[in-house]
Amino acid sequence: MIHIKKIMVVLSVLVVLMSCGDSTSSQKVEISDHEIIYHVFQRSFYDSNGDQIGDLKGLTEKLSYLQDLGVTSILLVPVFESIYYHNYFSSDFEKLDSTLGTKQDYFDLIKAVHQRGMKIYMDMETQYVSAGHKWFLDAYKNSSSPFSDYIAWDDSAHTIPSSIVYDLRSFTGYNGDSAVLTTVNMNSEKVKEYNFELFKYWMDPNGDGNFSDGVDGFRLDHMMDDLDNKGRWTHLFNNFWKPMITQLKQINPKIIFMAEQANWGSLGLEYLKNSGVDRVFAFRLAFEIRNFSKSGIEKMADSSLNYNPGNTSQIIFLENHDMPRFSSIVGNDPAKMRIGAALNLLIGGTPSIYYGQELGMKGISSFGKWGMTDANEIPVREAFEWYAADTGKGMALWYKNSGPWWDSTNVKSYDGISLEEEKADLNSLWHFYKKMISLHKSHETIASGTYQTIQNNSDSVVSFKRIKNNKAAIVVINLSMQEQHILLDMEENPNYSEKQLWGNDAFMQQNNKWQIKMPPYAINVWELEYKKTK
Image 1 (spheres, rainbow, N blue to C red):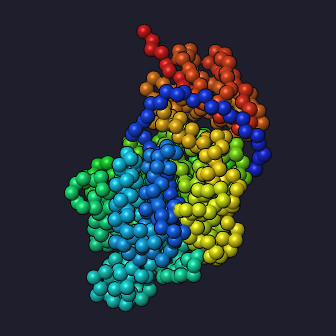
Image 2: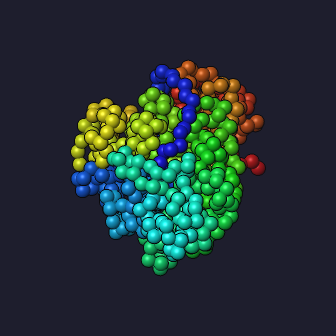
Image 3: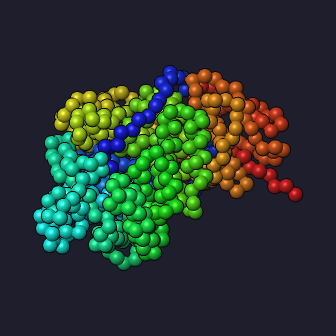
């Protein structure tokens, strides 16, 4: 949802020199059933009609870019009508924001995505509405309204709508527009039925049982079992979400649900076990990667990747639309950004890349800097930088000259952060992301192997393996600016052949240990193939 959430991340600031090689195998084995998600803030991505607002047609036009990068799926932020630029706090769940396009534009986008063999996910926040919503307008001071049960009221006369998260009763947008906000009554049977029909519609718009014209799944924003811990809408997993998800999966067993757990400190296991969702976001692992903490990364990777029930998984990410950009967190350090990319794409789960992350776009959300307004998050939702000059066809500068957030914009001309500049530089972050994505997709061990920490003798080197069938990928990453001489614990009596997939650092083997000398921030990946024993 909008970044009312304040993220406190403790970071170390280091100055480094990058040392990393590329010895990827030319043999490709595409893993078609594993995903790499691209999380896009569509208003800021690509403008198709010259009004400086990124739109659905613009996103359709740029699917070739996304496919060239190597991503397989697209996750949007909401598209429903709202007075707010982020489209949360909707005023109508049945209308699309006209500045983004029409329903037909959305259906055309879905069709184009599916024609490319890709998937598309829709962001849903249906537990809050603004006062412009018909439910509120009809039921305000009108207890006999057919929608009187849809809205949560704090009085019997229906004059005081219940507050939303953080006890907010109204909110002002970056452009000065303000609205009363309220919570939907999640206990209402009518609301439950409405949600089921709404989700079903976007899953199968014409209701013919052919799901090619519908979305492949949904992100459930700010999901909670006890909404906002108010004690009014409790046991929502069992009473609201799981019954609806189960019913929708009976119609389309392939539909995917991903939960944004409202408590970012949670591993999300209770969601995977009790709510019916398929995926949750690995927030705690993301924070430890930002901290460059070996012990934290190992602990959170093990917790996030090895204890998920059934066919569920965690979404591994570095950034989203509510969080400071990873580039700014690490001081725009090229070596650290590559470390983040490698962990994002090699460690496991379902990787997700936030738009512009692959360029190293900068931005720090400014909680409260400009008051209680969604302007505070504009710095992490700025226009995708297509051109070196940051001007040209498609630049989605919808917030241009709108306030002090524009005066301090991170979008700078000829600063090395743009697709035009980085495609021309084979050593750029963009090319690194493309290679990491290719490495992920080309090896089943990395795409879908199980995770296991490998012990070593350094406090600054993360090492783990990804195991699939008779193969294992060994990943060793130096998190520090110092050269590291490590001893890596391997299997006793090894019986395998190995090849190096990434990096230049050879190892020497002594009994069941590998000796490796690693330069600062080096990344090494080997793939082992275990020999059959008679």
